[in-house]
Amino acid sequence: MLGYFGPAGTFTHQALRTVTDEEALAFASVREALDAVRSGVVDGAVVPIENSVEGGVSATLDELIAGSPLSIRREIVIPVEFGLYAREGTRIEDVRNVLTHGHAAAQCRNWLSVTLPEATVTEAGSTAGAAAEVASPDSRFDAAVCARVAGEMYGLTELAYQIEDNAGAVTRFVEVGPAGPVPPQTGADKTTIVAFMRQDHAGALLEILEQFAVRGVNLSRIESRPTKTALGSYFFSIDCEGHLHDRRVAETLQGLHRVCPQVYFLGSYPRANQRRPEIGIGFSDQEFDAAASWVNSLSRRR
Ligand SMILES: O=C(O)C(=O)C[C@]1(C(=O)O)C=C[C@@H](O)C=C1
Image 1 (tube, helix red, strand yellow):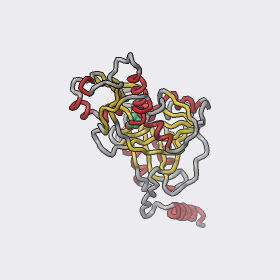
Image 2 (spheres, protein in one colour):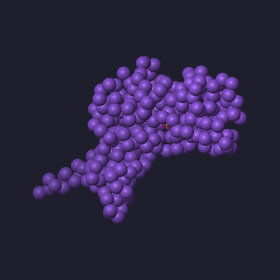
Image 3 (cartoon, helix red, strand yellow):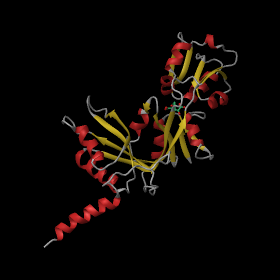
Image 4 (cartoon, helix red, strand yellow):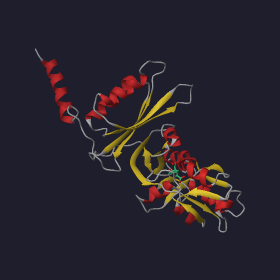
């Protein structure tokens, strides 16, 4: 069975529903969902990783490397639209206390400050959790910012819809399982890596980036996160185009292993948009093989 960042009605739940109708287990946080994968309570879990407006989901970036090895086996990208939902009878002009997930609040920041300048916005564990709380008759919160499905699921009234500041926003989710065999190449794959930076060393970030650049591997996301050990100590969470079984990606990993104190391979998996990378001249598997054979032939010379 799969787990997901819940409760029912989160965007994560919607993402999960695009890939399976089977019963799934809701967890109140990303950490609990990933812990359940690690302890074998569920076979895998869907969690949010990146939003086109707000960027990376820190809880996921950190938790992916915070225990026994995990592996991303699928990515799911869905559009995110938000509404304002309240108990029946509440008028929009009476809303003073709004509850929602931090990422949702950030995506509706301007709308909230213009439409409800007097309102206080409080962070909830999730958008659907906020809707469930607001649905309770004795809740001190007047309204939740959440998905329309969550508003409907918890019996709330829609006071406004499409309140996001950036139309067309999307969130990317990943299905994570225990580390295991890498799924086969599709030709349109992505690989997720975490690389720790060498400390107090000029050009440490450049050293990481050049491993990709000199092998023609395109990055689709790079984010720094503190290692939580000291000020100035960071790791980089990176998505790149290609699969572990592509020579250019495998050699990039070798290069990272040489220059970084710690590298995590978090999986190669099919890209949601099925886009194939452009492989520049000199970076195909055949060209890597031909180059390796040439070097080997030099050693065999008499
Ligand atoms: O709270 C939810 O509904 C979630 O699934 C989490 C989450 C996120 O972490 O970014 C997912 C999509 C939206 O961008 C807002 C919130």
